[in-house]
Length: 373
Image 1 (spheres, helix red, strand yellow):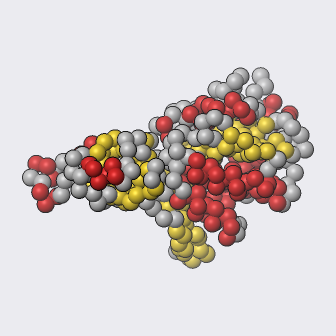
Image 2 (tube, rainbow, N blue to C red):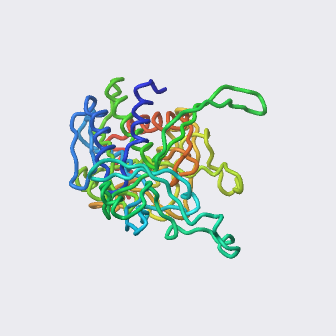
């Protein structure tokens, strides 16, 4: 399980400022964490970080990407009264935004603000019946004029992220109404997909520290600008030239009120998810079955996932170069693309264990078998 230094790293990653195109802060954290355990650390020219460790053979190349950006916003304009209009960078559900704190990064430093709208006390009856849309919202940083905002260093194009601290909590676990133990949950922003980055880093660290043999070269990656079009995945795949890819992501936990759990069974504490389909990629079936067999052999609980809409970095990596066998492993996470998400550290640990076990099986013959006719 995780020691305190690993949890501290996850906290730093979660709280780091890094929307698409502005990922330098979390990338530097990642670089400093993985450098002692890797043979090579390099970057693309888009802002992604690649870090590798060679096993007993140079090939196959096993790519473990997780995207390092987070959904955020960008300054779109400043009103005469000193309020800031903003555009989303990545996908947001408007209803999660009002009254939430944000951090705005300017050339002069970081400012705090709150997302607000026309006061409800001043809405007429018709307005009260309508959902407030993002374009009717603004960010208040305490200014009273455009001049004040500009004097504070704010410019159009400045990035904005949720202001949300990382924390852990412990809950009891029950099986058939019998208490069987405890679980540690994490709350914070940017788990989509800093948790994938964290897992890639932990896999490389454990391969090094624990001296785990593997018949390949493993390349972890923190890819840039996934939330605006899988952009860093394209450049990362060009540099890495992977023979096989296991993308590490969050998955949408459906164990919340209002869901039909028979149709959407993914839950916290149920183990990592193995993707069977999303709208950007059909996983390589041989690789998918190897992951399932490995989980069952190692007695690691898992959940099969299907996503009707949406995709991951694997969506472009699997069609890079001549093509690359891909699959996606996920950590069930509640409330993604909001200020506060929630996940279970047991699922993270089991996912890391599963990735390591699969990596140990990925020799040349096995990987070539994924595309053999």
